[in-house]
Image (cartoon, rainbow, N blue to C red):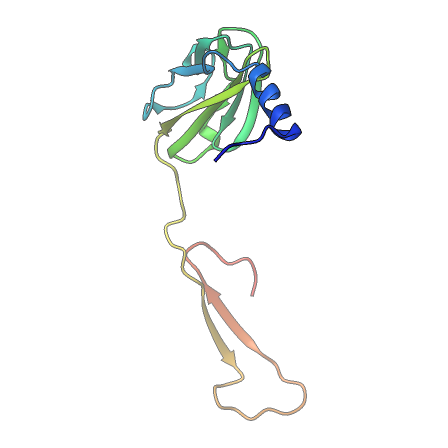
Length: 158
């Protein structure tokens, strides 16, 4: 089977042969924090740094929220107050760019440990008791009611 060189095929061939493809992929990596590192308090400066070749700017994310950009090396994330997040695993992500607009990304997961947290001792519903009218009573007209309630986390009103 012989292929014909249609105008569309010739245009595509010319475009592909002249396209400026990068000789190497843009690369970068976290210097700090390291994967699975335990962190606490404020994470900033060299405690959160990305290095790589040909990088001109880095966008940083905590979990999936954008937290800032650094446009000059060393590329460091803005201060992250880890006490504002629950203890456990969190993701730090860096999306880095070169001067031509190419980008790539890297992530590490860190383990936030800021001591113990206080939580209510129970999460059970309150106990409610209706004392008037009596159970099974037949009522008519205006009726007075009485009730009481208790809860280990306190009662605001009945």
